[in-house]
Every structure is written in structure tokens, then in C-alpha cells.
Image 1 (cartoon, protein in one colour):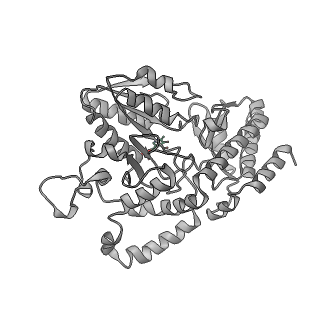
Image 2 (cartoon, helix red, strand yellow; image 1 turned 180 degrees about the horizontal axis):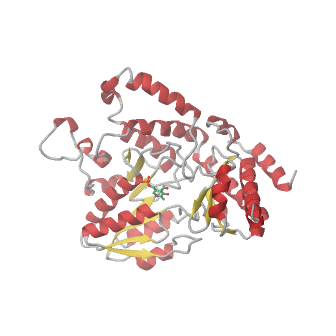
Image 3 (cartoon, protein in one colour; image 1 turned 30 degrees about the vertical axis):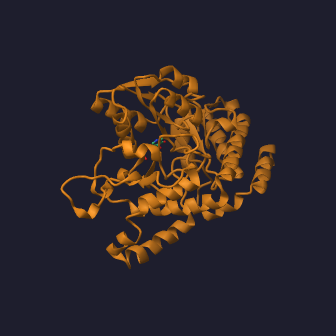
Length: 409
Ligand SMILES: Cc1ncc(COP(=O)(O)O)c(C=O)c1O
């Protein structure tokens, strides 16, 4: 066995979270699932929960269950998610819509709460939907986008933000973990700099939640959004979440005024009167079925604890870099993520001109990373469902496919 193989064996044997891997549905033919940062694996418990839901909550109770829990699900699940993963007190988090829709609601509400300020700060490395939403709201409200062009590896720094914020800034919209490089932005220091300029900050936590320890209340964050289908294993199209700091709630008015966010939805009144608190962020009927799997993953995370997940996540990405250094960099691949484990989230990206072709071949072999243009292979390592031997098997296959490509077979 190679040294890397022995290391993987040792790391798996010493992993205090190793037993959690059995909690996930196994997929015959999949050798290495390296895309839990895009779509988390389903939990076995979720299959049972969904069947029970059809038979009991929905089948037995029918529409009566709206009064027996479903109406409150957006805020009840929001509080659970906040406590388990966000470091946030109750009453500030809601589960609803998609990340994109919640981004729209919060960007619009935030810029309206800072009248007289004409700029939204956003970075060129942010995920497309964030940039597109900011562009749309700027056009709608006659605002200007002020762009940060961050170092692609290091991501957005405090100095980048300090250089562009000022009396004209209404909102700064950033991702905490960069979707391509995995670089972590200094959430607390950047939040402070934005506040010194009198502006609001909105953090996209899609690649952080369930992978990194967060303390939104302690860090003084204003607004945040994130999805639940990556490290929270909610499944395709699972609803997103939004956080609005309690102190800010009375001054924010989201633009999609719907009956489910009204003070009394069933009054069927002539005019919209928003619900008090975080509930006003809801617009239409809550996506109850999509929320079910998230509960299973939150239970597991609550049991294992975020600090343990973060330790495993750092160990996984560190091992992936070790393997890449030995097997892939000699073939011309480049690490496109920070080298320091503490500086990155739970994925690494490797660049190589042949990775687009390689990804298709890897998927055929049951090795599943994802490809991010122009030439990035993104390796997502989900702390509770990924093992070290799995990382080695996956990256060994990447090497074989690269070698095969250069031989032309
Ligand atoms: C950083 C980030 N923001 C937003 C999204 C997606 O938003 P939505 O859930 O609306 O598709 C993603 C999806 O991968 C993402 O990585």
C-alpha cells in the first residue's frame, strides 16, 4: 500500500465522525462523491421521514395540519437552523423560497433602508446569482454597482472592502466562502468596516452553513442568506434561509408582499399589513415538503457539533491537498484554493486545461466532483459523509484520467 493509502487508513481509523457515514444513503457504482458542496447526499432517515409524512401529517391530517405545525414551520425550522449552525438567537431566521429570491428580498429591503446612498458593493468573484440580483436591484432603484475585483485565490479582503466603502455605500454583498476557490472572507472584520461606513452587509453563507462555525449574532452581522441543499442535505430545490438581525427588523420592508407574510393571512383583508418580526420575509405558501430532509441533517449536526465538523472538514481538505500535491500537481494541475486549511471552506479547486473533458470521464467512472469554468475541478468534502479513503480513490481516478488523456485513450 502507498504512503497516501496508509495515511488515509489512519485518518479514517482516527476519525471521531466516521460512523456518521453510515447514516447516508449509499450509491452503488459511486466510488467517490466529491460534490456534497453542490448537492448533499440524502440521509437514510429522510426516506423514512418522507414516507411517514405522506402517511401521517399529510395523509391523516390533510389540510388540518396547517394549524398543527406547518404554518409556523418557516420560523420554527429557521430557529433550529440558527441555533445549530448560525450562532444566532431565535426570531431572526426564516426558511423559505430559494437563495436567489431571498437575496432579492434582502438586497431590495437593505438599499431602501439606506436612502440617499447610491451604491451597492459587490465582487466580481461572487456567485452569478448574487451579482445578477444586485444588478437587477441597482437598475430598479437607480443605484450604481461598485465592484471589488478580488485576488482569485485569496478572495475578498478587509482592505478590498475598506478601499471601496464610504458615505455613498448602501449595502455590501459578499459570499463568506468563495464558491470557486473556497477562500474564507474575514466576516467579522469586514462587517465592522462596512458598519464604520454606515452601510449594511449581506453575507451569502451557501458554502459556509454546515461546514464552518458561524457566530452571526456575536459578529454583528446585519443580513445573511444561504441554501440548504449543500452541507444541510435538504435535497434538490430545498428552500433557503434568511437571517435578519433583530435590531434591523423594524426598519426593513421586503418587496414581495404576500399573504403568508401578512400579519393575519386568513383575515383576507383589503391591504397588506406585514407580520411582525422575521415572519414578514415569507411571501407565499411555505415549502413544507422541501423542509423535511433539512431536519434530519440538523439533528445529526446538533449531535456531532459544529466544532467537530469543522475539524473534520479541515482535515479532509488538508488531505486532499496532500494527495493533489503528490498525484496531480506533477501532471500540471494547480491548486486554486488557499493552502492554509484555516483559510478555506470545505472544498478545494484544482485547475488544469484538461479538466472539462476529465470531469465527464470521471462521472462515467463513478467519481463525482464538479467542473467550474474555465478549467477548475472542484472537490467538495462534506464532513459527515466523506471519508479519507474516498478522497484518495477520487483523486487517484483524476490522475488516471489525466494520464489517459495525455496518452489519447
Ligand atoms: C454562493 C451561492 N449563492 C447562491 C447559490 C444558488 O442560489 P439558489 O439556491 O437560488 O439556486 C449558490 C448555488 O450553488 C451558491 O453557490
